[in-house]
Amino acid sequence: MDPFLIFDLLLAGAVIALAIASLTVRDLFAAIVLFIIFGLLSALAWVRLSAPDVALAEAAIGTGVTGALLLKTLHHLRYVSGTLSTAEVASVTPHQPVPMGVLIANAAFCGMITLGLALAFLGAPQGGPGFDARVAEAMPLSGVDHPVTAVLLNFRAYDTLMEVVVLLAAVIAVWQIERGLSDAPAPVLGEVWQGFARLTLPAIVVLGTYLLWKGAEAPGGAFQGGAVLAAVGLLLLLARAYVPRPEHRAFARWAFVLGTGVFAGVALLVASGGRVAFEYPPEHAKTLILLIEALVTISIAVTLAALFHGREPVALRLKEPRHDG
Image (cartoon, rainbow, N blue to C red):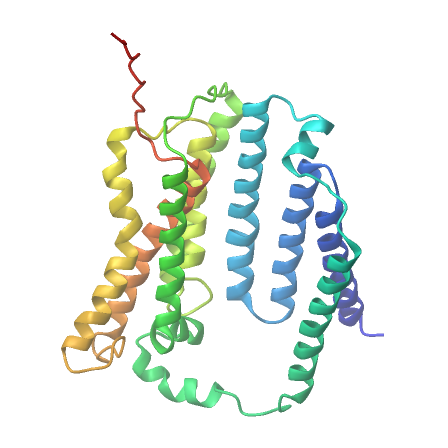
């Protein structure tokens, strides 16, 4: 038997097993660890499917940043309520008996969706031409050499713009929910962390910038580069080497909207010249795409770091006691 087939079967089985385990395990820390491992194996599965761009995004955002967010949330719960005991875990994630009718309805609904997807897959034309030929034909006018970047930033730029808008909406929602300065104690930085930071943080900055620049001709781009650069912010926040302050809010807000604003501004600028929005002039396509990707990378990095921090840094005023009479 083909060894690659055996590997793929084992990988598929491991992904399914980890997905089930992460949803059924009762220990919160174990569930997060299982989810992170699930994401890493999913990234490996995308590599096996010859989709390195998706694999990079899954490893950086779906596993790295999301895993860090989940661990930060667990730390926040433990800090607010003390060490989470079994009873406290049950209060955070209540486990109540689900009526049998609800279980049957959910199972039937999931079965219908699965059946529909299976029928759609089996009914799809096998070995059809797809859009490969049309993408290859339009590549000389796209401004980049990598087809995935051309699709994301040129051929279907509206979808990519909406993805950036979703990130912007997420950080706005988080900052509206919770405000104030974090009162968690700063960790003691030892020699191991200091050496790790000196070696790792500059390398992460170089790697994130490289992924952004390389995205024009190879797997990479704004989302992958932005997620890697966000890791710098996450490490600084974890070590309390950087503590957000109220006076930093203006800079953060401008960084949040920078990518979305420039993305939409380029579309309006192109449309004002008698073209369709995002129909870049061929002679300026590469410059405009690079400008969009560079500023979107900054917005993604700052937004993900802000989502990890989880609160808007404002100085909350204490209410003055009311004197009656």
